[in-house]
Length: 170
Image (cartoon, rainbow, N blue to C red; front, side):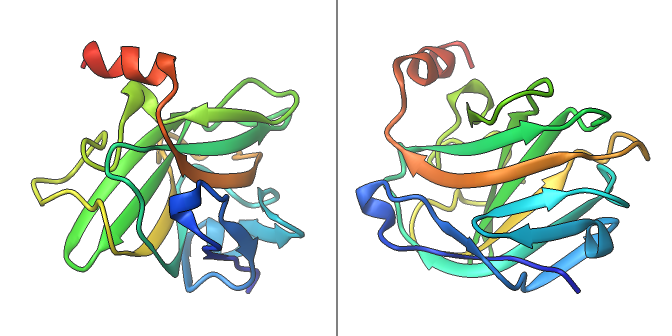
């Protein structure tokens, strides 16, 4: 089973997480359709938006920081959004990221400038802001069409001016 794990160098120093093998778990079409390369996760042949994969990786970050994914969509991609779920014990927080049009890799901030303290979804549970122990990347479950996306970076960073402005519009 092709898989990936994230290991944190130092989140509080805004270091990106290294993408390494193996996933702790994968499900749906990502069990066979997600592969790991040198520093990236590739959703390719067989992957659809109906799947996800997760890994255990402990870190802490400032609760006001915003998650950022480096995403590259490939021709034929039909997934419109990818989600990042972080868990801390029984608490979890989910972040939504729009998938860019096919082209070069782009850094994408969580929608609405979401932060660990104020994620896009918290499922009625307290927000995970420190002591995170599990990550999941999840498809948007919107269709059975192909998901053709490379994820080459995951990090938390201080919010940009645009992210701060988006927070005020929530």
